[in-house]
Amino acid sequence: MRPRLLKGEPNPGTDPAHYSGHVMNFSNPPAAPSEQADAAADHAPWPDPDTVRTMHRHIIDWFTWNARDLPWRAPDRTPWQVMVSEFMLQQTPVVRVLPQWKRWMQLWPEPSDLASATTGDAVREWGRLGYPRRALRLHAAAVAIVERHGGEVPSDYDELLALPGVGSYTAAAVSVFAFGDRQTVIDTNIRRVQARAISGKALPSKGLTAAETRLAESLMPDDDATAVRWNIAVMELGALVCTAKSPRCDICPVLDQCAWVAAGRPEPEYVPRGQAWKGTDRQARGAMMAVLREATEPVPPEALLSPERTAWKGAPHAMEQLRAIGAPGDQLERCLEGLVRDALASRDPEGRVTLPG
Ligand code: SF4
Image (cartoon, rainbow, N blue to C red; front, top):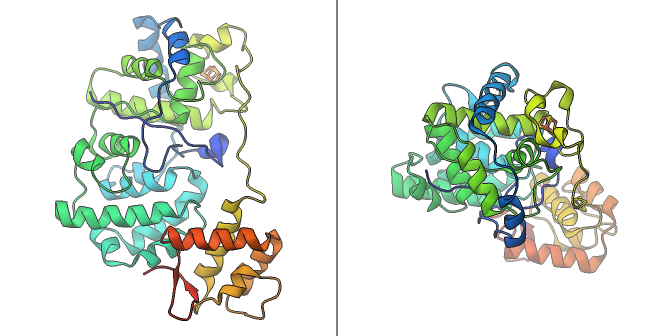
């Protein structure tokens, strides 16, 4: 079994909504292990085999009856469908991903379809999923799949990992959920369930530790099919029941085995900080991207930089939202430069702004 994991970045919609949402870095480098946390985790009680077997049975049974019916989990799902879902679910909750995923699958049912589209099309159809650089990375991955793999998503972990925008988490997730490989996938939901049910802590450490990884690997069922189901079942339990803010222990299938409950539900060792949104560059960039998506013609830069003073009417709804956030001019200027630098926006010869491609 090879490492795979992930983790890390802040999740705006996090957990409750994260319902999917595999929180992770976009390029998914494994988080640096924290030696201190690692040492502490190494002294956490290790579950005995009987307890682990009971957890396998209870959580997988629970999943059988309670899993959400999501199209990227359907028996006839394709590796490409799984890959697109994994990109979209990074940082974005299922409820927002679902319509956009369906739209993408209508437009681009195969990697070659997306590879033939422009990056501007990909960014436009990314809609309001947030972190639109994921659209560029997914487009680049589709191009690489066509060029290197004849248009078929590769099943080999290392070949997946070599695709643009695919980090260790995404490579592992596609290996597991598309090809049924036995790999350990660790997302925020899995870390939280593991921290509570096994380690007796309210929350996992801030960064993924080597001890957590070893524990997750040790919890994996032996056979491939059960291991795949275990991964997704624990993720789902973390998304629907063992949520960050309000775990629903009363309906949890492992309440009787849960170390955190047995310990009297001790307080977390730190207070997680939510991600700010209002007033941030992310908010301003998102509002500008909405203008570019709605616009039916190139956007004069003054419309983006002084939205309250412009007479331009090319994207009335999005312009109203851009005005509403009241971002100062220097912030708007910085954000516009950032969008151009990130290849999410282009300037035409007259200096007007458009989507790329
Ligand atoms: S009993 Fe509660 S804290 Fe323990 S795993 Fe279940 S939901 Fe999470």
